[in-house]
Length: 298
Image (cartoon, rainbow, N blue to C red; front, side, top):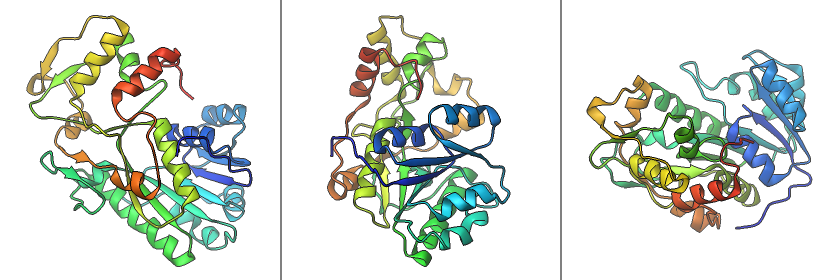
């Protein structure tokens, strides 16, 4: 699948309208979009791009309930907490009465796999999350898929690798002086361009199924290599290498280095027919640099 998907009759509700949801809307071009946000500033921003916004802080909302009951497609990207998914516990009844709902997509993370010692993992691999947020995500995945079974709506879980794209990439980090070349022997991270996330979601809409899909590019790579490549494109000096043991990292950032795995994307290619626009970070960074949009976000 390489072209844009037009969903003229799609009435999309995005529970948590963030970076990936924006990319999906640009790809799918739904007839209408309702998206939730927590801030008035973001609500005004969504209004300017044609998204009907709903301020949501975990309480019941008549506006959101009405939108959900009339939705044809539902995209869930808000993160869960220790009490579970913030939307599922409020909207379950509305979802049961969404008579035209054809597809639910839940955006999760490859973090649910935990540490596999650098081995390749596919969707059949054991999930051993090492952080609470991974445990909560795994539980939320199960809760949404169970709901899909109860209401007979195909529900797909997308386990996303580290997301990059316009406004979120190592070109920006270098320009702002934030880029670090942290080196840990054998460490690789998995990545995915936001446009390839959108491409995968659109492919799933066309072939709805209750499945788990890894969404990652073809080449897990050491983080310092990505910084070096971006610096080469920009023609700027490389930041010095910093051994992992000496790096100043937040507890969350340090925890990412505790999980080592290579995530396979074979299922989205074989079952959904996805052909990634950016199969490695090189193609992704090249396109961002050449377009001049690397600083811009959606």
